[in-house]
Every structure is written in C-alpha cells, then in structure tokens.
Amino acid sequence: MESAWDAVKALASGFATTFMHLFRKPITEEYPELKRQLPARSRARIILTRDPDGGERCVACYLCSAVCPVNCISMEAAERADGRRYAAWFRINFGRCIYCGLCEEACPTAAIQLTPDYEFCKKNILEFVYEKEDLLVDHQGKDPDYNFYKVAGVATGVADKGGHINEEEPVSIRSNIT
Ligand code: SF4
Ligand code: SF4
Image (cartoon, rainbow, N blue to C red; front, side):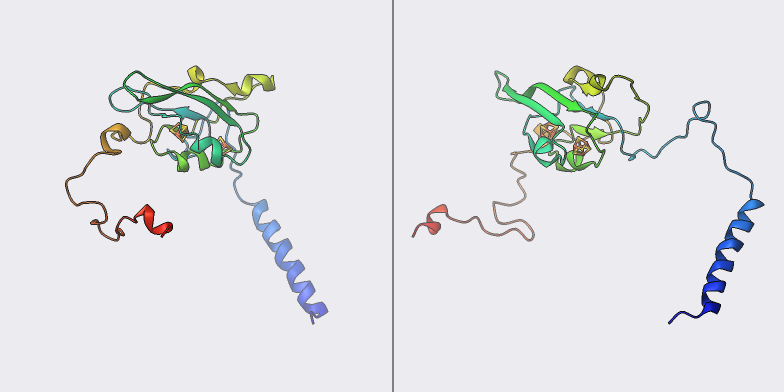
C-alpha cells in the first residue's frame, strides 16, 4: 500500500521536472517561415508514380482500396490494347484518409506512395477529393528502379515452380476433389 511519504516523493518529483523546464531554452519553430525537412518515408500526401519507362505503375488491382481502413480510395479498371491494365479513373478522398500507409504496403507495383508533403490544407473539404490527374506524378518516387512489368510473370531461369528456396511444390488442383 502506498504510504503518504511515497505520495509526497511522487509529487516532489513532478514539481522538480516542471522546475527544471523553467530554465531550459524553449524550442520554437517559426512555421511557416521555417519548414522542417521531414524524413523521406514520412506519411503525408499520396501520389501515383510511374515506372522507369514512364508508364503508369498502377494496374488497377484494387488492393489499396480493399486494404484502406476508411474506404477513401476508389477507381475503375481498364485495359489497353496490349493487355496492360490501368485505372480509367482513380480517386482518393483526403478528407477521410488517416495516412496509415496501408495502401502503400499493399500495392504490388509501388504505384501508390505516401510522401512527406504535409502542406495541403484547404478550407473547402470537397477540395480534398483528388482525382487521378491530381495524384499522378512524372517520377518514380521512393522506388526509382522498380518496374512491375519487367519482373512480374517473367520466368527467372533460376528454377522451376517449387524449386526455389523454401518454396513448396505446386499442388494439383485435382487433389482437392479426389
Ligand atoms: S494512407 Fe491509409 S487511410 Fe489513407 S488512403 Fe492509404 S490506406 Fe487509406
Ligand atoms: S495503386 Fe497499387 S494497389 Fe492500388 S490499384 Fe494501383 S496497383 Fe493496385
């Protein structure tokens, strides 16, 4: 059981901390005159990036939209004549986004990325609805070399299916019904 002496010690310790802070030099950042450089992996404004060939990385797979906990991503998939998928339209409602970064984690093509750009306040909440043309940028963001269409579905020549390290043999789908 806590004695009166313990309570006095706890109180004194709290006051001592307050007292010490009275003599510390305050740290005041003069925003917006002084803008702090945030780390590259900070999570703020979202962009849609392009691959090193300049093509849109997004293949409209809906994974980001499925994983988003607040349902603020929507899109419609379309297909080019050569079979490559893309988003006919892509929309993010930043008024709902909580900048959790799950969309970026889920994206198989490194298309959707969060950036350190935190300066996009608006008075009208409807202006927080960003369309594809607002999101699509002309660079590769944090993954300058990754090109999904150069690696996905491409034979590596290293081993057959099931032959890679820690990879299991392919399962015969017929084994489920016999
Ligand atoms: S950062 Fe989180 S809340 Fe925002 S769009 Fe991505 S998954 Fe949704
Ligand atoms: S941004 Fe990424 S996860 Fe979202 S639809 Fe496009 S490719 Fe899929």
